[in-house]
Image (cartoon, rainbow, N blue to C red; front, top):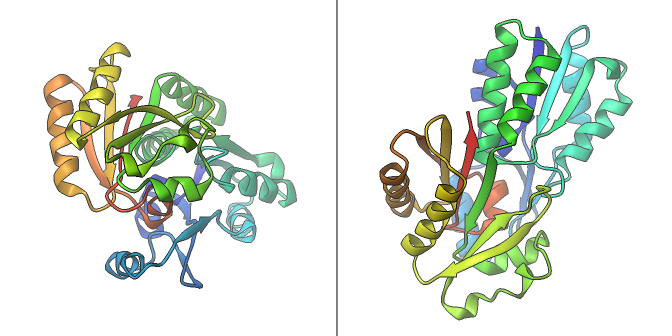
Length: 277
């Protein structure tokens, strides 16, 4: 059986992953000089530190932890489904660990080119296929097909978090939070950065702009629409209603973002994504 490995971009804790037979290697978080692991820090404490002026930083999981995970599954085929290369060093770290592993020939590191909801879906799909006896090539082919129809958008409340993160295109970097508008960011086609998509004066207006784009892409039956938020539950629920009304046959889910993504999008940010099932 193919063993699935991933990172906390999936918004799965190590425990949730273990329950499903998936190895989850969490990203690293630092705030006020203290180091934590993604999804292993108390969220009330994390938000309180930001409110005190703390500037959180995130980084890829330790290379050694990937290496230990690969070693633990020697003798098995291993598929590490990583978050998008370019938005994090996680993919490169996973690849470096593979190159160092004795069982490197049994390891495939897959760049999902996405994150959060769609990344989570890909991992769960791969794990289900693996448990049904699918071969590595079959699983990778299925993931490739899903990713042919996948896009991600981010609604931002505090643009300075994104600006500090350095993952913006030059055009997107010119956006200003002083405009009193809600910037809408779109993940670039190569998955490596965020670009400017549009602006709106309200979260509801921003969600409708994204919804109209989804309609142009023929999102509907056989698609998953994922809404992940950073303590913006009310807004996320309103967006979910907008999406359900527009795409009655699509599956719509609401997730809560982890600290690693709050370091980039800031409190109250909301990711809206779709992927073909």
